Length: 151
Image (cartoon, rainbow, N blue to C red; front, side, top):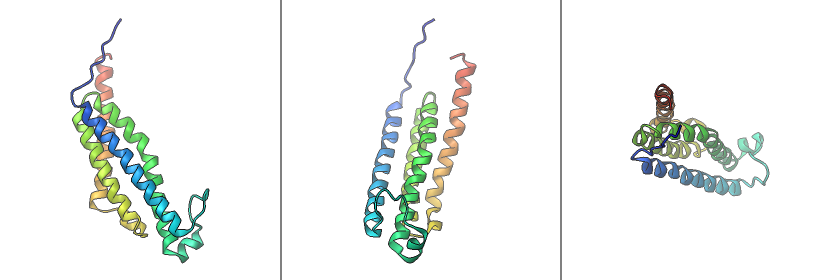
């Protein structure tokens, strides 16, 4: 039995929005590097010591920048998976959700790097959570439809 894979119209939008996450990660890496240098935290140390962060705003900001980047790295596999699954049926929705998630992550990072972790959550950064949940729900629905269709 031969199956034909049909690439839905709109997948180019998905490619573009997924590519935007590479720029997000690159930007976060640059910020972390800049803050690492200002704080004087040597490699391979991942974070500034708690006492250093308490004594130095530079060390605190480095820790916050590092955590924002790490949190994004923790989330991105789920974003990629749910985006790719959703794009099989709903590519424009998938692309829009990733775009919203990426923009929200920029605001999340900007809030976090102030040195006050509470500022990572703001109205725009919260949109990222809605995008994540939307991608998860739509990917579940897409997989259900594929299974039901016998694909």
